[in-house]
Length: 171
Image (cartoon, rainbow, N blue to C red; front, side, top):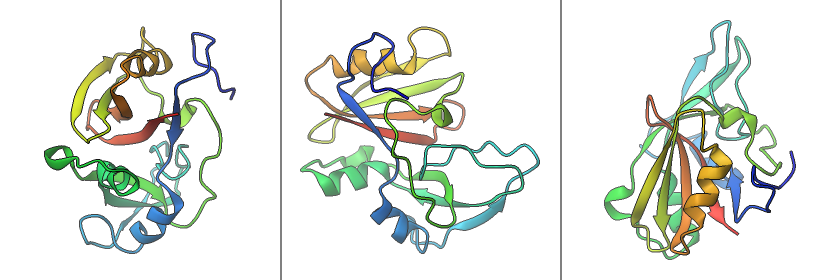
């Protein structure tokens, strides 16, 4: 993947998987203070993995765990997400997979319906954008949200379950 958006411009953001140091802890005890639950995928696989931003393979054993994405961002910044500091389920490889090192928006987090949630540097929510698989694309939506200089972070989420898929941070 190249590092240009659908508009042909270099993006103002970087797509980020869950950081390796966070995954090390989460694979033992998650953000709800419980051990991860091991899940064997069905014959189709395809669950979005937040460690490498790919998809699970059929019959693969993956870890289901609770994750608090704004908490991780707050630990790296001066943000205080307060009431927006929600915890939800995510899938990751049960062992270190090497993570995702690409650029752009990986195919593993694409889907028909996505929501983008924008946050300010202090951790407050600024708004969001619903994507229905047409226009705007994820890249166009991210560029639109990052057009607001107050936006520091945008989360990409699945609409149906509200699950966190990936974090983007302003470059």
